[in-house]
Amino acid sequence: MQAVDCVVVGAGPAGLTAAIYLARFRRRMAVFDAGRSRAALIPRSHNHPAFPDGIRGPDLLERMRAQLAGFGGQPAAARVQSIRRSEAGFTVEAGGETLSARGVILATGVRDRLPPMADAVAGVKAGRIRQCPICDAWEVRGRRIAVIGSAPCAVGEALFLRHYTDDITLVTLGAPFPAPPAVLALLARAEIGIEMRKVRRISHGAGQGVVFHLDGFGQLPFDVAYSGLGIEPQTELARDLGVECDAEGRIVTDARQRTSVPMVWAAGDAVTGLNQIAVAMAQAEIAATGFHTEMRRREGLTLL
Ligand SMILES: Cc1cc2nc3c(=O)[nH]c(=O)nc-3n(C[C@H](O)[C@H](O)[C@H](O)COP(=O)(O)OP(=O)(O)OC[C@H]3O[C@@H](n4cnc5c(N)ncnc54)[C@H](O)[C@@H]3O)c2cc1C
Image 1 (tube, rainbow, N blue to C red):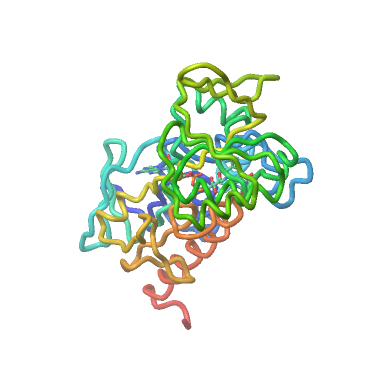
Image 2 (cartoon, rainbow, N blue to C red):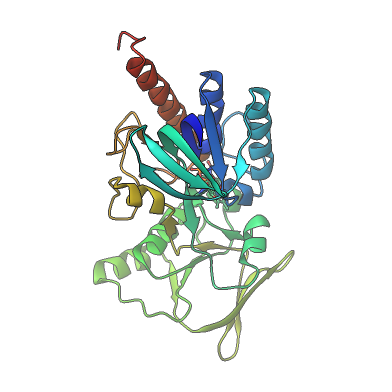
């Protein structure tokens, strides 16, 4: 059985940052990735610091993988199936391999709930279907915007976006909208429309924006649509390990990115907090440094 110091689960911005730091700390590590980083969907990020002309999500990941390769690291394209506690630390099953690890960094991210349309991913990559107003509301200021959904997170997104445009409609896709009177009053004050008619199909295209084809007659055209359908934390491994998660299913950590299970750290979107690249990177830097420091302490070679 291969023995490593640390297994990093996930190779998005968080996992790759952790891996770069661990490689430079001269730690034996294995990095596994199931290949569904949200960053790979970003057409071009304009809010990630240090890129005045923006950077495409896939290019950012490629740069990080190249940086890691420079220190001898390479993520394996495999899903981690299980992590169990063992005498040495943890036993990890991934890609038909079994490894023993002293510690684990979980960087498994979240999964976006996309609108019900066959080509939703293509719409996201083209920037017509959007997932994150904090990331890219600036780019759609003054435009006609639909926010898809009827849950509180959709209402929150619509109100957030109202700061950027006065043309916003909440499209519930035919779902009822039993909001309390205070919420309805708030939406009315913000002049946010509510469209509850059933939608047969959603289409999108260059020069066409996003079009909601109503069940009966008619179409509702918008420049872009935001999905207000929320996210699903990818935290099954954490929960199987007994790691504490919050009500939304995201991993709870302390300020040093330690989880409730000793020798398990977590970073990135999977952790409670703001879903942003720079946050994921910063948390991973803290997690990897914490892991290395703890190993040095266990090796009896630190004052801490
Ligand atoms: C359309 C879109 C636009 C965005 N724009 C911006 C922006 O402009 N600026 C910004 O700061 N943020 C933006 N974000 C958010 C940003 O993409 C995320 O904050 C960032 O990717 C989080 O990094 P992460 O490493 O935590 O998770 P991810 O990048 O999602 O990576 C997690 C990885 O873990 C893997 N994984 C999960 N479970 C397992 C397992 N069991 N075994 C192995 N691997 C596993 C997944 O397959 C995935 O590859 C955007 C997101 C989207 C969807």
